[in-house]
Length: 255
Image (tube, helix red, strand yellow):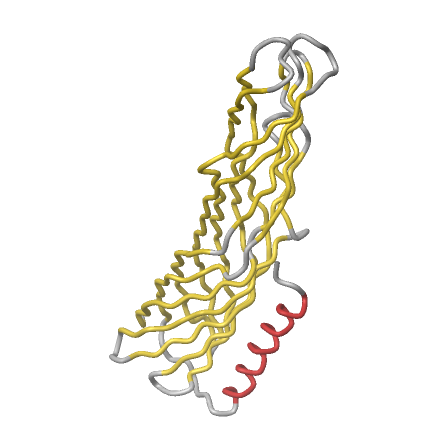
């Protein structure tokens, strides 16, 4: 998890960058730019899911510690100059992660009420996705005709998807069913769209009149910090984190 110190350091870096180039920048005369990037979501996240599907007329309990690993993101954005060095833009980013999650479970006994058996196993191919649309308000600092630095802030709209436990199917051992031979856990994707705030900086270097390369550094935080997804097993809500610090590099086209 990204702690407050890291977030403050990121904000301080962007403010210092903007301050250092402000005195030596000129007017932004371009109509705008388009950027296509490949990057990384830098932090991993963990959360624990507890589901209670019905088995043999009783509630089973399935506990799954999840890890959302850091990984690659795809990002595309564009902005247009509105007034002097101020511009507005929109961007889209996608992050996805797949894990093999271990689980522990208490499974009711088919012959004896109130006598659950403990079992454990793994669930492969558990998916987490984050699709985000970023509305960007930016101030451009043209350090030189080739080098441009933008300070960006604006709201983001995240659609967060997560595979969650929807059911569990035990394979019984011999009577009196004191042990479970094996278990299969079913999952179902749940998703929800929430708002957040993104701050960042984008740096572009143009090696020709139109084409260039660049990179971005940004931090996105969801309203409330997490998104609450409904458990498909009917056991309440599961709180899942999303967003965070992202770093990317790619191509720029000057309009």
